[in-house]
Length: 208
Image 1 (cartoon, rainbow, N blue to C red):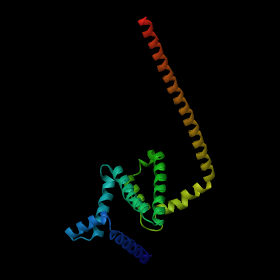
Image 2 (image 1 turned 60 degrees about the vertical axis):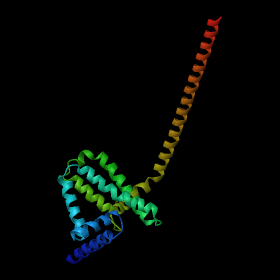
Image 3 (image 1 turned 90 degrees about the vertical axis):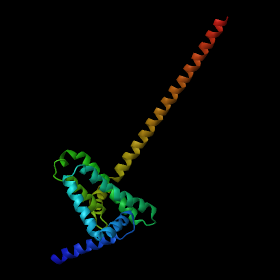
Image 4 (image 1 turned 180 degrees about the vertical axis):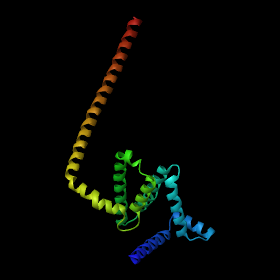
């Protein structure tokens, strides 16, 4: 048991160290801090994570910080995925955003209950980091394949029918609205023309 836990910890450490060696804005900043302080970048990241965790528990604006963490890096990684030629990273981050949207929807309706959970924003941040973690079976993969995917596939035909009916109804409503606007504009044009005619007739009568 102890050896398994130690092996898992070493695996996480190796993956984190590999991620911190990639070339991007964040690692460039870490390189500068590492050069000036002499502290390894891994320890800097761990210290920042500890500070962030404490701040999310007791700090002001924890909701904003939590949502910022859950959005900033995934958005950056998604842009990189769009610009790359690989398909795997597209699927990875698309899955994350599906889970993120699903969680946001659940959170909206359960907000009155979630408010009472101690350190909720810290727990949510941990959950989002788990969902975006650079591992094969991260949170977004597990939630998507075990929860969201079965539900969507089960009701896919009904959902598609409902979307088609809604689209047809919207098209019908827009068509009616367009017709009403056109009729209104035509009535205004006719009214303006009639007013001009009456004014012209009044001027002619006055001249006589």
